[in-house]
Amino acid sequence: MAQHEVLDLIEEITREDGSTYFEIGNMVQNGRAELAAERGFIQEVRILQLNIPHSQNVAKYEDYVNEHYVMQDESMDHWDEWKKTEEAEEVVRNILKENHIA
Image (tube, rainbow, N blue to C red; front, side):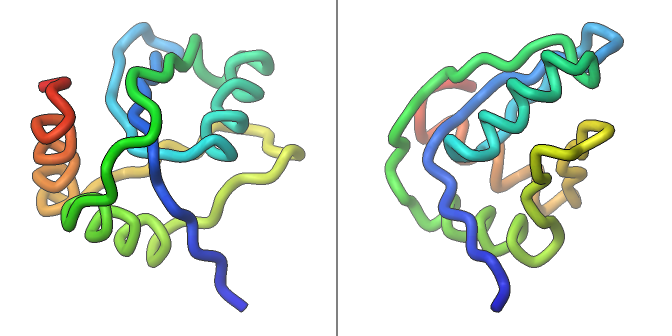
């Protein structure tokens, strides 16, 4: 059975090169990001907002993430940044606006 991740938080991830990006995730994904930071795959992760409303944009992004990615497990040997299409980028921008982050 395919997994279905429910996304309910916004975080800022700092890549190894110091650049940052926003991600819509959940506590499991955030825990994996924390582990990735401990292992040196990324510099850091910060939760910016918890329990975001489950808007139509969040539902669209959940569908995108669940269709294209599988949550990394604890044995990860790299950080799998969720690359986004232009449409997915627009949805994330809308989520950030809805939550007064952008």
